[in-house]
Length: 376
Ligand code: DGJ
Image 1 (tube, rainbow, N blue to C red):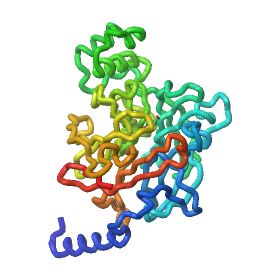
Image 2: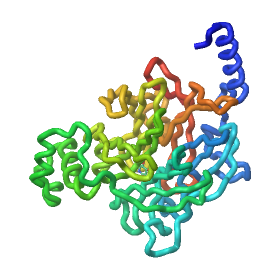
Image 3: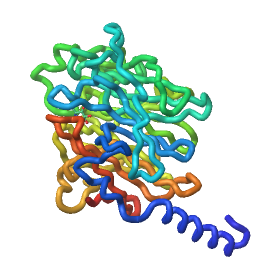
Image 4: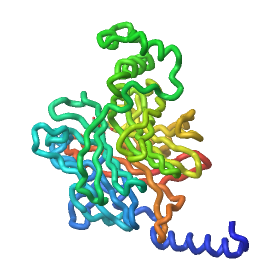
């Protein structure tokens, strides 16, 4: 609080004016265009991506996708672009490159999806997590890959991949589930057996089956809370249940503290952010590359309980998130680099036959109390 309210009011008006100058209220046309050229005229190739604001610059990391049907396989890696105005982006190169080493988990032909980068103040390093699928194994590996770098553009050094939290009990595990794990009551063959009656039961089967080996991890994002604690949010249990898992102090491993949310609801493409102490989670349904309706949930603690608020989209196209699938949300910065209360929802408009040409849809979020509203 300012001792003299007058000084506070003048400062508030000034910062509002400055942020208005830095970022006009009108969203750039590029945010909703069929193609978004970078400063050299090439369509931006950073799909399933996220933003890291560092040293006054926005960095957009995303999947470099190829063209044609095989475009979902990683032949290049994770690309990074930079911008100061969120409209004009300069290609800063390949942050994490796939290799031609046949023994490497990230050899060309693997899948690297939904990469996100966070900065660790304690170690002074940049940490990238991504969904990794091994070359030649379709989507069966369901692993989380991690890489680190000393400078924001990289090159990122690949550390390895995990199925998170082997042998660790999630927060709120019921006694019945604990018993099932102990008794190993759910064997692999029975998981797919005809006694599986509902999605919720199937989700539990996958959770129990993976308990000792580590939980499956596909669509993912990262989130750093105000206290510096980082979280890894991923679609687990064969995409049936989301896990929110705490990362350790280095951000390169899991602490074993995690929660299972929306059990059996089959949500993916998680987007998580904290606005004024309320946690917001926006997800998509699981329909491959085809768009579907988004769903918004809020919580007062990241560990839940999470309250589903429904589809945040309004207007024509609301049932398909306007033909897109979310990937990240971030606050627009003011001239000093401080976060404003203007938030951007980033999404991909996938083109399954030419993934590298997939378009983007960025929308400024409207808030009504704690409700998120997205309008095209
Ligand atoms: C939907 C996911 O959100 C994408 O990242 C990708 O894995 C596709 N499924 C593959 O079908």
